[in-house]
Image (tube, rainbow over all chains, first blue to last red; front, side):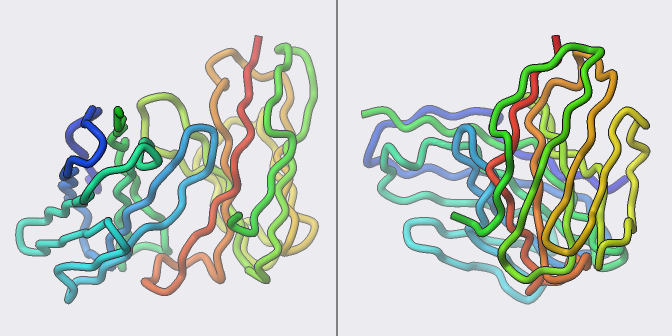
Length: 113
Length: 116
């Protein structure tokens, strides 16, 4: 069964600190992996997208990594800001599918001053 | 803004009411989607439309009725809903319905629905 599991479920950090969110998936065949940021009361917004051949991609203070062998990804946030408080969703697309995206349940991050 | 708008942003309705959610995309995309997002659960795909034609119905109860009059507009008609249908309903659009790397889905802000 195609699944995407994220950890931790929630996380609280102090402003200025770094943090890493984890995503494990069992989707096959694999096409790409995306990280989305969803602010409270808003729709998800794409942060990064990686294919099988990419093992790291950055978007400002956000850096995503992908290990296609172990089927794991991480999202590292550097020098966190209060505006980073949001839900972060890992999404995997299967190339064997008509394009249905498989969503993780998200990690809720709270950055405190 | 993502180029996808949704109205209303909040909706409270009784179980016997009929209401509609509206989504409009200004991105020139051909595919549009409805998702349901419940607390602490992954997004659930409900319907997919490509060039106004429904290409996927994810076993959604008939009390949810989608309508896609053109590639830019998508509606979700609601009738005799249940309290467990309370959730955030998200609309999204993309160039086509494939999950390809360069085919990003853009989401609207969602409609927060409460069924009493």
